[in-house]
Length: 171
Image (cartoon, rainbow, N blue to C red; front, side, top):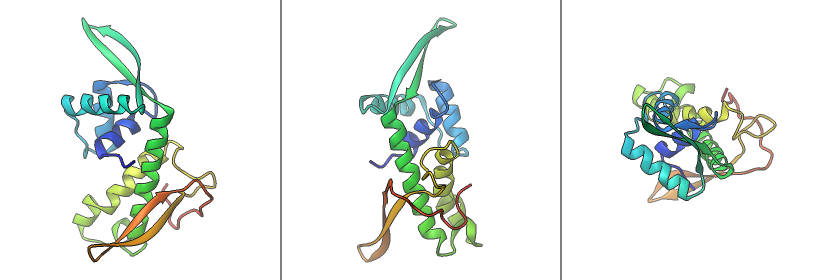
């Protein structure tokens, strides 16, 4: 299942432990370098959907200044989903970076700020917490070239098998 950026960063923000709504929103903005700005409606809609899919659950509630504050935590299924998405993003970034585009080459700033480097950075958010990486240090994924409407693309399928550490890997 492919995650939307908002859902990806909500789950990534919960990897370090339970957080309440405002803290999730703030952490998601930090982790995404400001790319993901969650309004209350977007955040709580995403949390409700993820809760119904078993990706997050309510950890506890407390009252602060007369207002209820609900804390959420990531479930095992949520951790697996964000790990798979991190692997997918890393593999997608490597497809382009291996062709000399993105942070590995002097690409136009538009490509760097909106494309490949953002994929790699999003993958590193989760991988820096020790999840989504193969035990040997590489990100495990299978990349299969495909064609869609005459455009060369790549289908990325995370794999749990052994994978070599990518050249210039993600640190």
